[in-house]
Image (cartoon, rainbow, N blue to C red; front, side):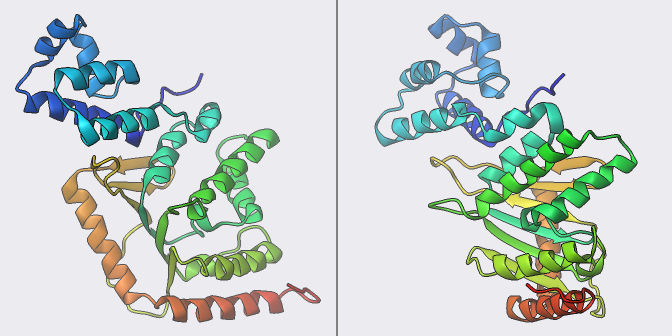
Length: 296
């Protein structure tokens, strides 16, 4: 049985805005229910994103809240966006709560990441991703077709870096150890290093390496901070994602600010993008030398 989906970023933006507009009119949920001949429970479900908002219902609320002009158009457009089904929903039976994370990742304008063990998923080659996904067989038997679909998800996630007209901004700091840790075989590592050099050419990707011989100011585990710009003039809180054998999300302002400072600290102490590129090129050469008669 598939997991019940958490509301998407767009749905939560819309819900928060509907609640804000009601409060601005000094109305209670009961007041709205009485005037629209709805149940109070329906108003609550809409304002807490526990149910999808129909555009017709949103129009009725906007009429009640006396919202017109450009602001009305913005909210209706947001409602239309919130109703769209993401590609990741077709994988919900396969990857549990990950569609919820992918939905948030797809909405983020800036993705900050610190990675200590592996190449981040958004930067992995298909071969590298397959080795990582297959590794879960050590704790849970995974059929080959399921592995294929998990790899498909990882590759499709990477589309946000090349989407138009506004690709996601990615700022990632990777510990040097991840570049040396064997995933698959030497050929997989060789092509993964080459892929990093290629993707670093994208103007929206900032990749920095933290050398193992550099003083380490902050011994923090891997994390991802998703930052969101206003959409249709509606804001959304930033979210921190941490992952080991389980996954956790945090979105309170104190916690997200803490991780933002941590990322700034690590990025400041890491090699700059140009030096990081040279560093990766050296490691690529080292991997290449370990594979006789191998040509890029």
